[in-house]
Length: 314
Ligand SMILES: *[C@@H]1O[C@H](CO)[C@@H](O)[C@H](O)[C@H]1NC(C)=O
Image 1: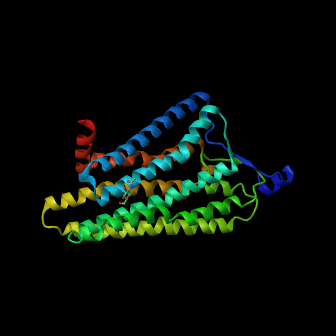
Image 2: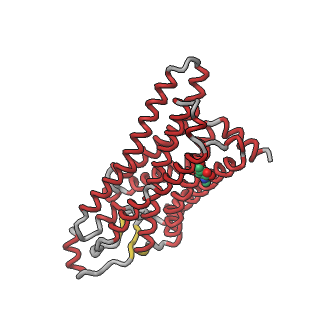
Image 3: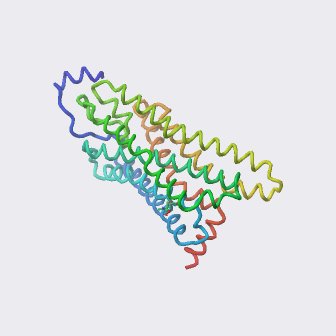
């Protein structure tokens, strides 16, 4: 229904809370979904926690690459904690309400973590680029100070823009409907509920996507073109294999993050989704956070050795 028509029907009621519709499933399906989410949540938190602990404990992992990796793990734990626990509570209690403030906080953290993640992926690509294309100067270029600076920048760079974006969404009047057809507070489904012109919000969203999505992606692409060009002219096969193995896990993580981002934002919006599509979009939202620790620990010998030394044999 056209929001303006409904406004007239409802006589300008002001929305003070939202309903996160999530999934319309039967009670059995809801329990199943709850169990699946709980399992995903626990695996994600424990896997990433393990990466952070082993990086802290093992001196052989005190290098920029692993510091950034453990930052990424901390980020993934935050990322999944913004959306999943709330979903589990509403699944189990059947209460789909979320306050305006709760919705704004969730959106703001989700967006900030998103831009932090793409900044970290670009930082990690740069780290690999220096390590492989400039190995002699690597320790000098990526010294402790530079690493801390890069980490702090990655954590904070998106915050101002995302706070403004969230503020602008919530300064819109919501007077038509309070039903968000999504499983968390994302800007796009909320803009559909606003009964005012949302063109400023849309412009800002595109600008942010360009700055915090496409620019880091271009940097990553550029780094990897240089990395691959360098690896190809390495004289020994052993050298080629070794150099490539340090960046292949990062490359998979990049592909997962951008792949799921593209699916989430460039594919039809959830409102146009059938229920199955919504469920699918939930899982690919969560996938990168859950899989990262496994991708790194399965493909990386140093990390495997450190895990054995510190965890399994203690
Ligand atoms: C994040 O990276 C910085 C800089 O390398 C490092 O000092 C810090 O310990 C890392 N934090 C975590 C939680 O791994």
